[in-house]
Length: 127
Image (tube, rainbow, N blue to C red; front, side):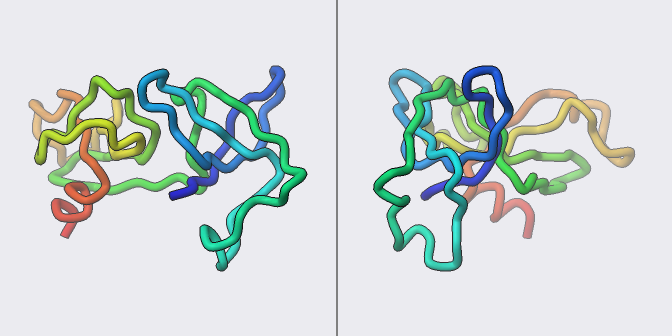
C-alpha cells in the first residue's frame, strides 16, 4: 500500500509517495510530486511521474502516526528487514511501529528497550 512522506532527492527535502519496497536491498521506490487521493491506491501515479530509488531509512512518513501503548510511544516508519515484530515474530513488513527514544511520563523504567510491531499487532495492542 502506498505511503505518503518526505525524503531527500538530490540533497533537497521533497514530498514523495513510497509505491514499492525492495526488501532485499532495504530500498523504496518513490514518486515525487504525486500525493494520495481518496481514489488511491486504485489510481496509478501519472505516467510522466518520475520514480526514484531511495534507502528505506531515509523515508519519513507524513502525516506522522503515533500510538501510545502501555506508556510507550510508538511511531510509524520504515523498518529494516532484520527487525521482527515483537508480537507475531513476522519480518519483511516494510513499515511498522517502533518505540520512541522519548517514553511517556507514565512509562515503566524497563520501557527504554526498543520494540517494533507490525501494523496489525500494533492495532491489537492499542485497543
